[in-house]
Image 1 (cartoon, rainbow, N blue to C red):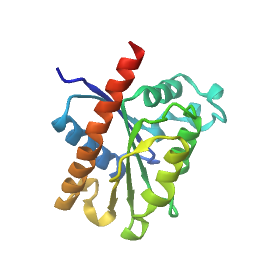
Image 2: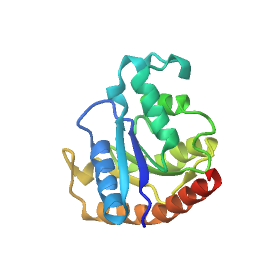
Image 3: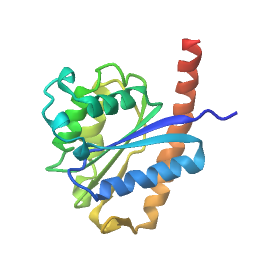
Image 4: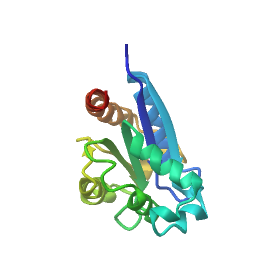
Length: 188
């Protein structure tokens, strides 16, 4: 029997619709085609003032607390952000500042980003991976970066994107299943 992976995707876009959300939806579809998942998409801009006004975790409102707990309890996290000035968005950083510091330890995280040009492609390596390294997460070796040229609006046009997403998903699924099984046996 296949265990269902609880996948939570966090999108740091400041508006909807967004290219980053389109990429995450493709990643979730690709995961669902490979294994059984239960998924939740968290678009940070939609969390509103209860999120943006929370200086500390104790200040977070009900919906924000639910989103934070969903990430902390997930078997696999997709962390995705558009690039602003060479890094992730402030919303993205603020959200992960509120996540419990040890809740992502050894948790598989699949990194994704979108930006205006290929010049921002290293955001995954130079900004996102260090953030999740601090949180002690297991980041998948392959992240997925798309530039504006890969889209028409929010429609992904570049066929190579599907191959990159498939490769990233293929890397992370066995690890997520193995770590989930280990956690399940240590709880029993």
